[in-house]
Image (cartoon, rainbow, N blue to C red):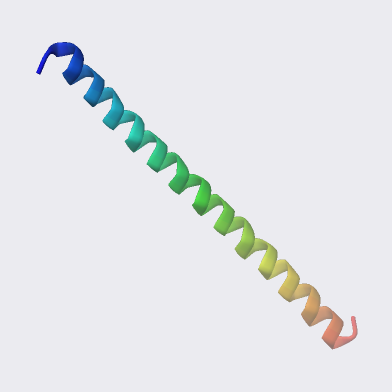
Length: 52
């Protein structure tokens, strides 16, 4: 392979890894937000059921 071809595939692989890792971070952040909202919702329901 020529240098340009090798460089192209190296950059392509690097970009794919970056994109994958970025998506993983976003998915984890959304999941964390969902869990936090569910906890707050649960606390509010408990208050309602206890009559507070």
